[in-house]
Length: 126
Image (cartoon, rainbow, N blue to C red; front, side, top):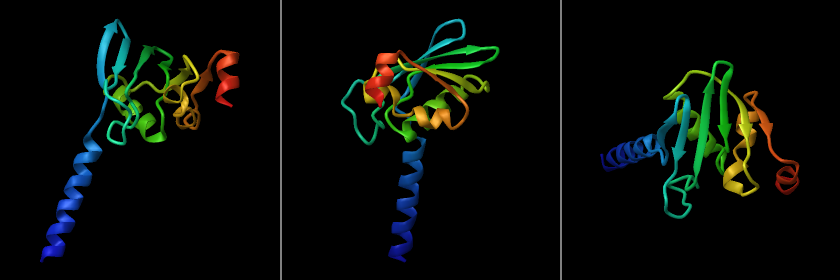
């Protein structure tokens, strides 16, 4: 009986963790949004989303500014955007070479997004 109770508690804890998101969406202008990360240090709990990102909704699709530090962070970003629009993320702009700005690139590229960055940023990313 104790094993079933422990398993149930573990499942509930996992479910609660899955619902957590370290991002707050804030509209800053018409069709322009900020994704505000936590202000503390990077952690497993905040998926290294202790920075701010942005997205712009256009009739052709979403422009995402920076992609987070992990594929899990990228999924959280995508989920936050999906709360605002059902438009696909078509373009990603990397604003710098810090890892929390671009390590989620592959997640969005696999879904068809075009990646855009300065040449010097791309050199550092490689």
